[in-house]
Length: 88
Image (cartoon, rainbow, N blue to C red; front, side, top):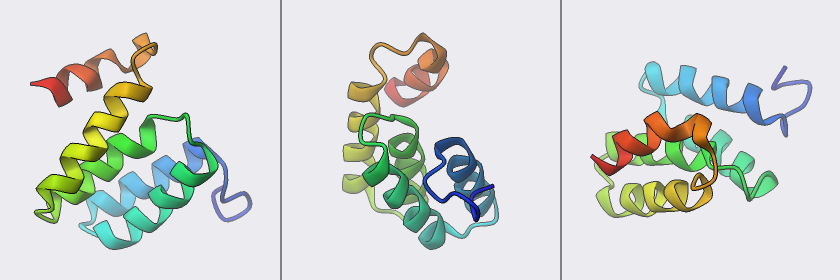
């Protein structure tokens, strides 16, 4: 689905998460950066960018991404569990 429509948010997130699970954080960040550009109000790319940057030891970037996630997800009760994790 992502190859057919690279702007599709959910397909892109699933692809990036699969890459992250394989330790491929560089390519995952490429996908997530495109998604964040195409969906500027979506919190999901920012949460996952934080994960990849944290895995790469890039703490400052990870903290900024997590903060952006918290800002964008403030009105999203479906993301409360993720908000709790970020805030812990």
